[in-house]
Length: 176
Image (cartoon, rainbow, N blue to C red; front, side, top):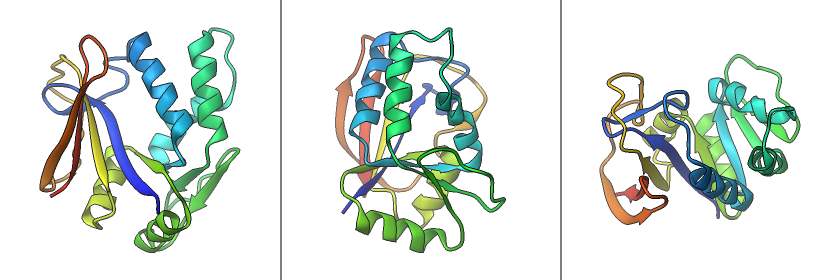
């Protein structure tokens, strides 16, 4: 059975904003390895549209960018949306009953499936479907933005803390 994992970069004051602070090359390498090992990713519409950036090669990309794009393109993706957007290669649209669809996905797959985006994670948290939360804590204060937890924080138990780079710590929690 697969497990759903929600992990994102977060500021000290609890916000996620991929435009406000980018991962260092070392952290980006970590994320490439994570993407290579994932059984797939589940996206909300908005986050999927952001990630579609990786569908097309860009002339300004470095080797690491190509590495991440290759890993991202190779994995299956499921896009949760009520507005029926078109989805790209290796992606499927999830419509209808979210709980049923995610329980079926977990039952039919093995490994870790990334949950991308705080809004989708909140919906899955309310349904009791997130198996693990990974906070990549950066020494940055944003003072605004999208919070990591889009709603009330669920009761959690700290399972691990790892130093990923010189200034980033990964905190791993499971539902309590």
